[in-house]
Length: 219
Image (cartoon, rainbow, N blue to C red; front, side):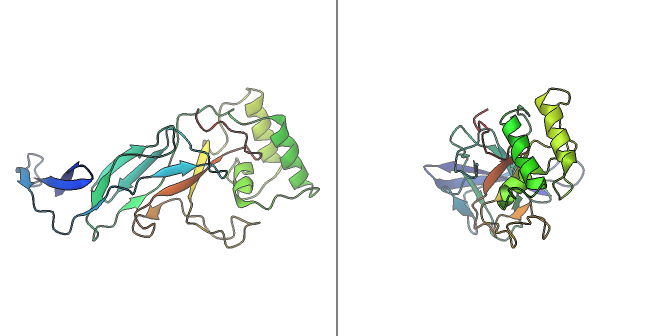
């Protein structure tokens, strides 16, 4: 088993240290090398988390991982992670985004309830896939009065979480909904191959319950 740590200066790879494990837990120690053949540095390829209005979302975790390695970067107030990273292109790196510490009432008002009710009654249907995902707070892949009740309980302080225990969802900016008016037409990928994203894990953040996008993304 090997664990590799990279050291970079001025956006250039200097060397890396590879930990060689013998499987006993004791290991064989760190191997120091300046050999960076096949190592690809991506100093400009950082993670980013934005609202659908391109507002930066603070404190979003964006892990980069394989089956034996995980490193998590967190976005700043500018919605970006400035932790440079590099990787071997032959490794199957994956990524996703999450935000666990947040005020669930952030962005939720009676205006959201009114908007969702109009959608349910087909008075004014929503066709934006991100707003539809935001309205589905019980993760049933549909929008019903159960979602209205769940949001109302959170607004009133009766409940402190939604039925699915999520506050945010994150979808890659690269992802295209095949049917925008039905975001559940196909399973939505929430974990992505870093290579498929061209090494750029950029995400749209969806605050559940907030269909008029009034959330403060800096909280």
